Image (cartoon, rainbow over all chains, first blue to last red; front, side, top):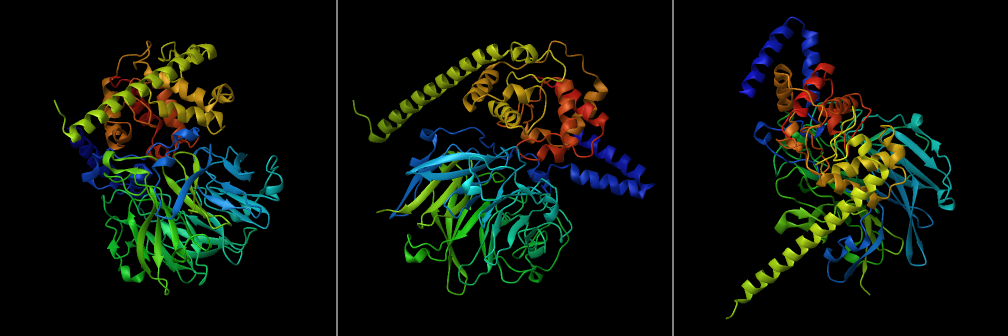
Length: 409
Length: 205
């Protein structure tokens, strides 16, 4: 009954609008934008779904409640709780003196974690920011990116107790202010360019492809913007191959196209400016919500990482602590699904590469946070970071914790 | 009398689960009790109502709200990320534990409409119902608008507060754990938001 009335109202609106095309267009645009960003492109058969983004935990998880005993790593490795009490901990960056800087989203903080005599000390060095997810370190300075705000904290490791007022670089970078998919992953390229994602401000839509769904790089002062890759919906993790220096990136596939499509993907970017296909194609899958294009026009993903898994932080392993077979392979954190009827992800995997850079397999590495029997999760890994000793940190946003994986002695 | 091993294991598991549930329930009761004492000491009821049903214009009822929804907003107040005076000042010195206790207390109270709720207007109820259907409010807030997790209860909430919140989301002065609500109400007129608030305020609590 209600649906029928709505349809009738729609007809009246359409008739009224026919005499005023500009108004009709405006109304159509409004109609499109009125679907919540996460629900855009949802097919009618999923309209009754109760799937909704999971609640983040914004308060401290006491260390005895962090599910470290549930974690599993391959034989020969050990995993321990390295730091806790960092609600919302996400992306990590390593300072030259060993400080681990940690960005967040909802809670608006940046943390600094230092090792003091075998104990970790956690400080909040910035707060009241809008989604300061992007953290990058270079030449003694910490760069924090909060949607379109870019802040530089000079000499930060010498003044963690009093970081002072940062240098404001927001105008120089001139990033879009859109909050949806506007949070950043940021890192410096081997040739010193500050590189970051600019996600698309919708679930699935048509948009300015020179402005969104990009990986872009800048000189550290915000000048000389260059598009490294386009048609990448939202990459919240990338790294450069230690030998070839090629950029590799994870990407989040869109929601509401079904439980098993499209997959999140891993991308190998051989040349700056390559087009990887969003919103039109994921591999050879044409997205039905946008005009059809020939998918062979676009660079194909290097690997599928699973549907809705939220593949985020990724790094090549270059250390000496892990066995040789892990050298130059990619560790990838999969934060875990919400837009899928059965949970998937909530782990760290390894992408295996052969000598030519072809992905030969995706293997589990850190597991135990997904309780499949009860379809619930215990934690959400967001980023991985190699320490100088070759051990690997994993941030868990849900528990505000960081785990350390090392070779068992 | 002998038990097959599997049954025994199941029985042990059941007993353990029962114990854990009781322990969890008791912990929740303790948190709610501490929260009640803190709410009393802080005078939260002065604006939000002694039993969490707000008699105050533009101040929300908290009774029966999901605990996570209360925690989220208290954290946003404390961290200076949501501005609704005097809440940022009142939240400034609260610990995580105190916030969780307050949330447990208000979540434990039975929800209900404020005493000063007026009669529903049939035309605006119809308009609001159509909007709620079109905007898929019931997906996250659930079909009975009881809310879940970080998503607040809307049924029986104060109409003036619902309208204030909806305008805040539309005008970009307020956001939640993500930007979903801002996108949902993008471009809606004041009259549409008022109809939506009227409908939700009169949904059975």
